[in-house]
Image 1 (cartoon, helix red, strand yellow):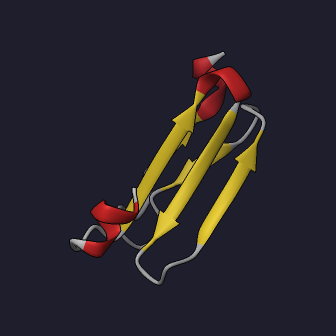
Image 2 (image 1 turned 90 degrees about the vertical axis):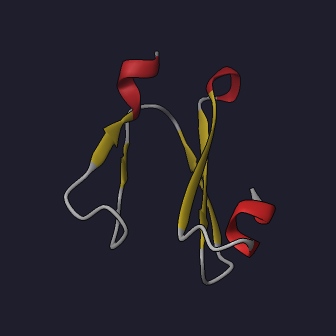
Length: 58
């Protein structure tokens, strides 16, 4: 995922279904770990208004 960010990707999600985790990588270098598939991921400023409801992955 870091290679994607290094090459210009502004926002990347690494979703790990077995752990019910999503890792959010941002262009500023920050990485956030979201635990639990009862949440939604936002497209933030990259895809304004887009949301991925993680509960569909259960």
